[in-house]
Length: 107
Image 1 (cartoon, rainbow, N blue to C red):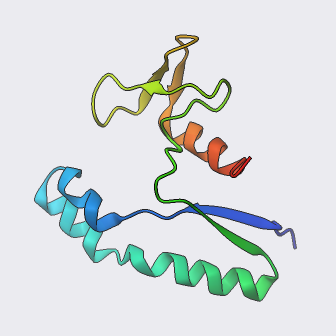
Image 2: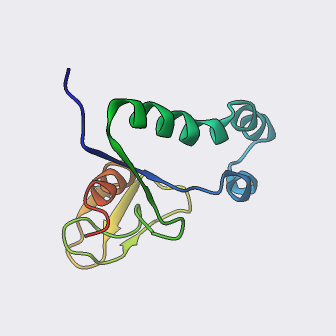
């Protein structure tokens, strides 16, 4: 069985994010998903497997810093999925960039 030695997750404040999530029905479905139980479950299972869980700082802008050059990305709209690098003008996917930044956190 393949396992990872370390997994990094973000410490997100879901309750503070709800007002910017859009429609009321979507906010309600996010609340019903019990996302607060994700971290304790992952911590439990990782301890059982002998893997370390690292929690990235809540204020670390993982999706806003470009993975390659370290500059801040520009969003054309508030909830844009594709961001533009201010240094290279490269189009960057927000989620893939955040995953790469968390993979290398806290370097």
